[in-house]
Length: 320
Image (tube, rainbow, N blue to C red; front, top):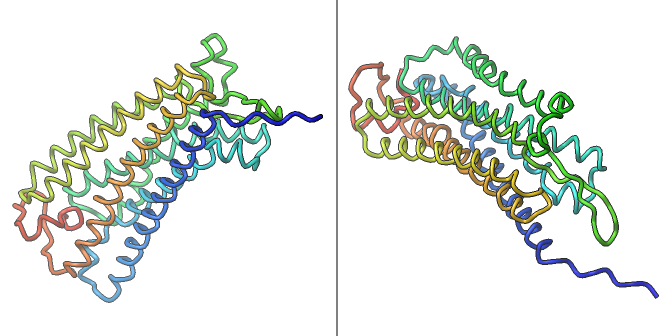
């Protein structure tokens, strides 16, 4: 007589809940990113009929890089979820292991550093004279700044034998989970402590420059609403990056199979998500919306000139 499979444990339902929350939030940020892309390309098309809007469009490529980084960052989190790697059986065990390694390298080494560095460039360029011919140069600088982080992450994740002398949690980017009922094996992704340390070093440099840039922008504007936006952007970015590093470091305490690890991983994702939402809202959607509303009638400002209340609300796109 065949035995009935044991009922799922409460821990199984908590893991599934974490996955569903993550997937729903990924869908939400992808919708917001598609909306941001629509704003960017709508402004690009609008300048053909309204030449005055050309002054508002000099940062379109950096905004595009920002949004694309967020999109790929979101997809990488979708591919690492246990719902994809375990429940749906889409990938084999070797493929799941490779996806876990790829997630750490691309997320902590490329997509998020590129997104954060682009935030910093957009904030700095909002108070500087902008030269459209330097667009490719700015993108190259962003990628060059991300290159050391990416190379370190590749070394940590794919050249682990060189680091065998370290304890396992320094190098652990996955564990193999075995289903009690069926015996099926699947990969559960983790954050190696070495990768967290590399990202933390980048985060310290980023936050130092970002806080200084926020202070410079605030010192140049007199519009209260714009000050509130800058404070919201700065405080959210600082809190999000610090929280991410903290929860990634805490996650090494538990095995990836444990629910506590799932909660820590969810907090890592929520921290990055909050930074992405506030970044796209304040540095992409809001300034383009202001530009379209102004219709090119707002005067072009130069660095060092006082900002009038009428024009400072659009200074992220008008300051030259």
